[in-house]
Length: 161
Picture 1 (cartoon, rainbow, N blue to C red):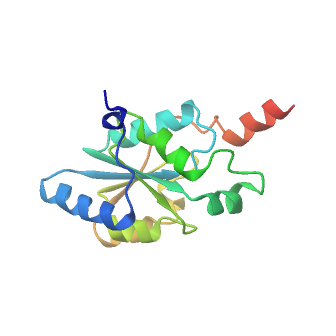
Picture 2 (picture 1 turned 60 degrees about the vertical axis):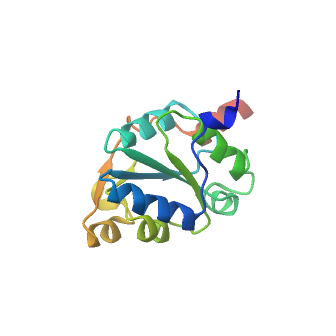
């Protein structure tokens, strides 16, 4: 049995952009979700499941290690980017995974042009930094997932105590 068949492809931006174009031409609705996904918890699952419910294909963009350090601090990430990508790619509702190294997903949004850019409930539609870029080409921003009462940082702090 080939276990690789159970994982979504982890693609470079160039390959992802090409795949998205083909999928869009096939009439599929594309959803982009992003995050660090460093210490995976149920809030991540609910966020990604909510994102998938918006369309046909779910692309998950994972912050590169350097950006996680910039966002979360020097002791993060706990799990290297390639392993985080593999964990996310194992979820049955994830279709493609990519790793991005910029501070925001703006460049990736421009390359993929998702029908929906899904963000977690710690945002409002008006506070999503990339909202104007998504709207420029006719895409929509959606807030999905459960209330933001799960946090990798809080879990790590609890374990440390």
